[in-house]
Length: 191
Image (cartoon, rainbow, N blue to C red; front, side):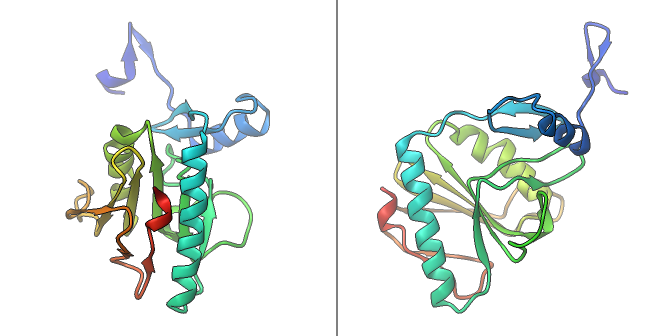
């Protein structure tokens, strides 16, 4: 136990993935979407039309890009990803080699993770970027709806301290994946 675990002399319990999934199955979170980050449950914000439109456009663009490069990879939306024993984020999109099957997606099958950000940019570029880098997710994109750009991250550092570099690509310019060979995604429909 560390000092970080103590609040006013009380021990804080970090939920495990299994406890989180049990609580979810039993209806403890109601109808709200949740994520488990660092063993703590976070309710997700309601998704408004600009967010939904960007998700839809990105799915279509990714599917077209994957088909054009002859890839068998698939795009999943709003899928929970098991990143560690205490982390189950729910990114907006994941490109994966394991679309079939039951349960949450293991992080090793998350080849490209995408977050659509209108009000969550600080979280998406901070704690979530760190979480995905620590879990060795090869590539991570943040679609910034406020600045009409896509922030592309690739190649997690070996020490888990983030990604090597960030590309800032304006809407309308093609997005060239760094880790999925031949994948180019058109971003014109995002903004």
